[in-house]
Length: 316
Image (cartoon, rainbow, N blue to C red; front, side, top):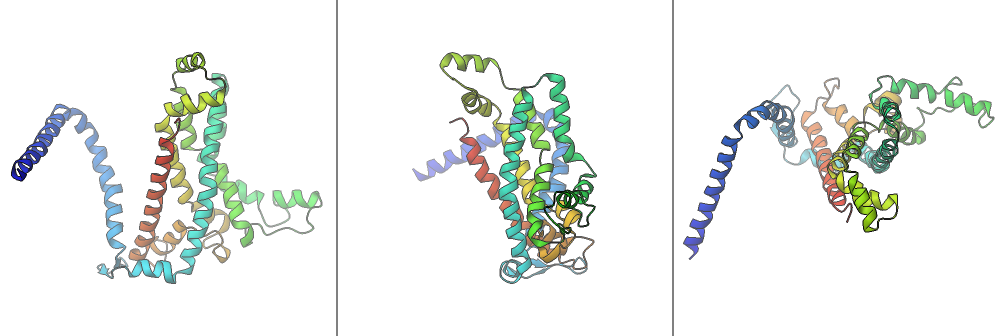
C-alpha cells in the first residue's frame, strides 16, 4: 500500500513538472522577454544577499581570503558593540515613528488630492512629490537648523524673544532624533504617494453606487469596504517602500548631523554598516559589515511579513 502511495506521489510530482514545462514552452516568448531582467535581478540583488549571508560568518578584509569564524561576528555585534546597540535603538525609534506616520500621510494626501479636479490634481501631486526627488533638500534644512544666529529657526526664536542665544540644533544629541524625524517625514511622500494616487485612479466608481444602494452611509465606510480592498496591491507596495525607507535611513543623518554624529545620536544601522563596510572606510571589515546587513535584512523581512498580515485584514 505504501509503495502504491509513493508511486502515485512520484507520478503526481512528475506530472506537475511536465505540466510546468509545457506551460513554459507555451509561453516561451513571454519568458524570454523577462529573462534579461531576471538575470540582472538575480546577479545584482539575489546573489549579493546570499553572498552577504555567508560572508557574515567569516572574517574578510578584501585583501585576504575569507576565514570562517562561525557566530563570532554576531556575538560581537550584540554583546560587545555598544555603538551598534545605539544604532539599533535609533533605527527602531525612527522606523516606529516615521514608518506608520509617513505611510498614513502618503495615503491621506493621495486620497484628498484624488478628489480634486484633474489639472489641480496634477499640480498638487507634483508639489507633494517634489521634496522626495529634490537634490538640495538637505541644504534647506541645514539653513533652517543652522547653529548660528542667522539660521532660520534661531533667528525666528530670537526675534520672538523665546531664546537669547542661538541653539546648536545639529550639534546637540537631544535634538538629533527629532530633527531626523521631521526631515524624514517631509521627504517621505515619494513612490508610495504616487502608487496610492495610481491605485485610487483605478477604483471602479460604479461600486460606490452599488454600495450606496446596499446601505453604505458615509465616506469612511466606502473607504474601508470598497476603496482599500480594491487597491491592496498598491497598499502592499507602499508598505514595503515605507518600511525600506524607514529602516534604511542614512543619508539624512550623514548630511545633517555628520558622520559619525555627536555621541552617535543620529547613528543608524545603515550608517554603522557603512562605517565598517564602505569603500571610504578605513576598517574594511566586510564580514562584520555583512553580519550587520544580515540583521537589517531579517528585521526588514519580519516587518514586511507583519504588515502583509495586517493589510490582508483590510476591508474585513
